[in-house]
Length: 313
Image (cartoon, rainbow, N blue to C red; front, top):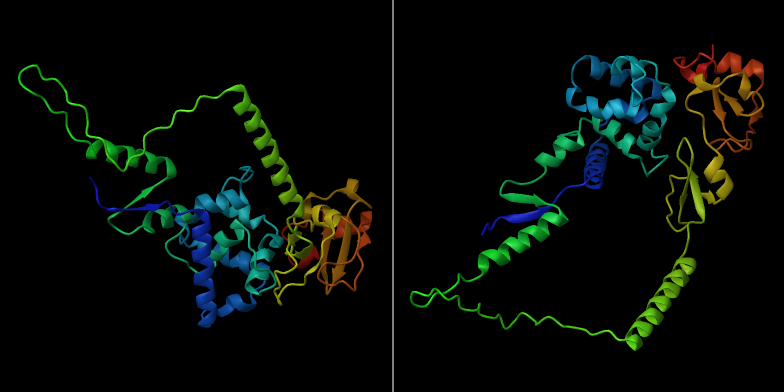
C-alpha cells in the first residue's frame, strides 16, 4: 500500500489567499513601488507593456476570459487596448485599501502586477503540492479507501485438493450491519421527524442574522454584516434596492441616445462617470447625480471608450 501523504486538491480560494498574503508582505516591506499610487490608466498601460514584452504567455488564457470572453477582438492586445480604464479601478481601489474583498478577476490581475509566482492558478495548483504527496478529490479518497480494504484482506485459504475457500476472519472492531424492518408506525414517526427538522431549519434561517450593511467597491454596492468593521471602508446601512440596482457603467461606449434621461452622471475634477440609478455619488455623497442629456452622452460617452479621465475631451 502506498504510504505517501494524501492532500486535498488546492482550490482557487487557496490561490487567492496566497496572492493576497504575498501582496500584503510586499506592502509591509515597502516593495510595491509605483503600484502604491498608480492610476487605472497606468495600470492598463503596464499590463499592455508586460503583454507585448512576452512576460505573460502563461497568463494569456486567464486574461482572455477577463478582456476577450466573447472573442470580439482578433487578439488580446487589441481587446485590452479597447477596454475602458474603468476595468482597472477595482485593482486601484484594492491597492489603496478602499476595498478589502476583491473579485477573482481583480486577484488575477493583482498577481500579474506584483509578479506572484508560480501563476496562473493552473500552474500554481500543480506546483503547490510537495513531492511525495498525492492530491486527491473526495471521490478519489473513497476509491483509495476501498483499495486499502481490498489490499488488507487475507488471501483465501485452501485445504487439501478440493480447494475449499475458508470464510474470511471477522474483524472484531468492525460492527455488524444493522438490518431495520420498517413498519407503518416507523414510517409515520420518520415523517414527523422529517417535518420537525424542516421547521427547525426554516426557523434557524429566518432567525439567523442577515447582512444589514453595505459598502461601495468601485462598481457596485456589496452587502456585508455590520459587525465586519473595517476603518478603510465607508460602511452604510443596507438598501436592498440600491444594492441590487445601483451600479457604475464601466463601458461608456455602450451608451446611445436611447439612454437619454435613463442613466445618470457626475462630473468631478474633469472626470465623468455614468450610473444606472439616480441619487448621490457613492464616493462623494455631497454631490448629486444628474440625468444624462443627449449632449452629455454624445460628448462624454459615445465612442469615448479609449479616452482617459472619464472620456473628457
